[in-house]
Image (cartoon, rainbow, N blue to C red; front, side, top):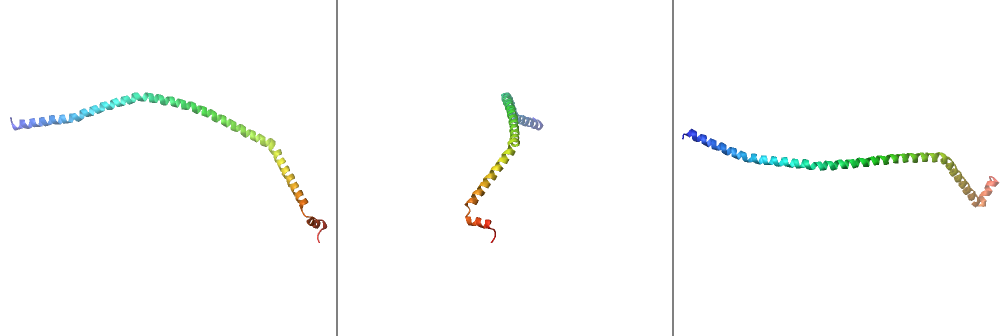
Length: 133
């Protein structure tokens, strides 16, 4: 064998060794990709019930929101009715009620003033009646 042939055999052996060393990580990478594919497939299969449950939940939430909208509309109507009733009460009874309150305040003030005058000492009244000295 010539030195060229020996060098060629060494190069061929090194190339085979390199291919074997590179084949091991490639096989492992292939297994990893297969497992990742299986995991993605299982996740996809398991996500269908999740999406179905989420869709059911959203349907129930929308139903409840419609009910809340109805309740809000009724509360708005009640609020408007209370406001109208308050305005009606103020218009019909407010004026006479204020007048009655003012009249009773005036009467009570007059009665207090009269009682106070009766309780004052007589000396003070005599000056007023007799005039200035």
